[in-house]
Image (cartoon, rainbow, N blue to C red; front, side):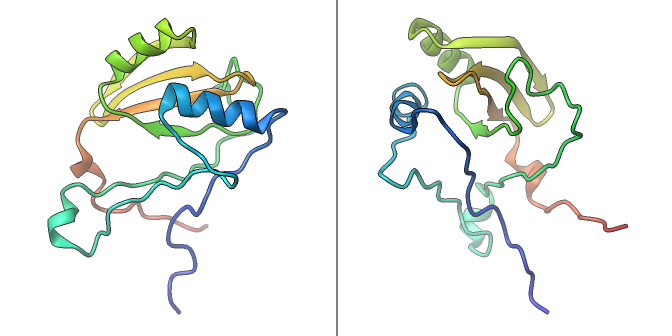
Length: 142
């Protein structure tokens, strides 16, 4: 049998004011939307010259009692790849966007968190070494 799931097709979530939220994400994070939303296009892994720049999208169920989304009260969090996280945070601060927590750095990159107008915590990630993700993680079933 062929693979059943080959990636993340989309992320969908509720908003009290979708038009306002789309405008906020366009202004502050550069995510332009049409009436349906926005699309992110990733490089194909079967193209050898593109492999060095391969992008991945992570899917990760978390425990029901996680505090990782705090202070947001949502049941989800979206991680957005960014370039030059420190500079982006300076720009977002000047635009009045709330930054929560401290910037954290790991071998695979830097992370920071902001709140959108609905109070949803958003994760920003500046990858350090895309090569770490060339082999997809193994998913083990029990």
